[in-house]
Length: 495
Image (tube, rainbow, N blue to C red):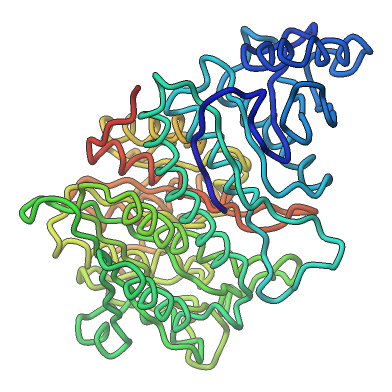
């Protein structure tokens, strides 16, 4: 989809649809007032008929006098004083749906005053970009399916144009990253295998000159001593891959940010097999890895002045005669031994070796993300991702980035008190800590492999995909990661 910043006289703008904001009690935004004046009060006259009472919903008008736009879509924004960026993007979602119903593929949005800064432009443009995604690889759209948005313009007054252009460029890049993460997540497990992910990473490097990719096969991982990771893939006919993507946008001697994403392309639970109900959703168990793919693409397309490494351990977890068994003990790359009490706690096994592998890059910080525990969904639901770190400053940094990107996190404890739940009589640790605080003990397990650098863990089990009618990958936490990287790189985002 094409995104563009425009200016000039809104009344003379030639577009299939001009979107204008309206507040409660039929109060017009400044842009709507200007268009209303040019149309000799036609908009105000329409509103007096009683539509958009309460300032919610949409009203579509055609061929208004004195207006070049074919249609004008009046968008309810609620109370003026309460209209913030979050309410704007929610309302815009309604408008974009209405455009689809009306088979409109090009539109122009006049952002309300106060929401036409960098953050407002980026949020609106990203919302439009996300609306243009539709999964089609294994299900072509129906003949009567609404057309996707092809072009979305944002009207911004001249003094704010420079910040708006930066915001639009960032939105395009983040939108591309989100779309990639959603597509990888939505693909079925028989297509999106560890080998497929590795091949996509190689293709991305060919498509983006600033990106390079290296793939470690099982022989290379065995030579390194990745016993925990390789123990998971033993139950599958699909060989595991460790995918490394690199972007050198910063100074040659600058330490990199390392992103680590769980890439379980399908998780049946292994010998500790999952219930059949909703097991199909375990194709989303690679959403952490998909998030790394998306964040790498976003950073490269934004040209951020930062050094970045993305690591994705990719495997399947299936029952087989050679699969992990409860009670098995494996030796990790760190040399620590792990008793496997539950083979369905496999994500931490592939992550722990990857986190140890990350040490060789002398990272500035490491963030890992994984659909790691159902316990996190019970604790937090589907709205925020769980955040775990022992670094208060890093926690504040990630939390602030999540708030700014509307991709929120909530910090959960990582206290030493919980570590004893991982005690084992037969190894340095067990891979589960019992029913209590499952998300916390999973993070505690990972923390044992991250002593060499600043680290945070994101449990995205509740946020990586939606259920029900809207079932599908969300692309989270690509917006959060992108905002984190923008801030880390020092790129200007203000007016």
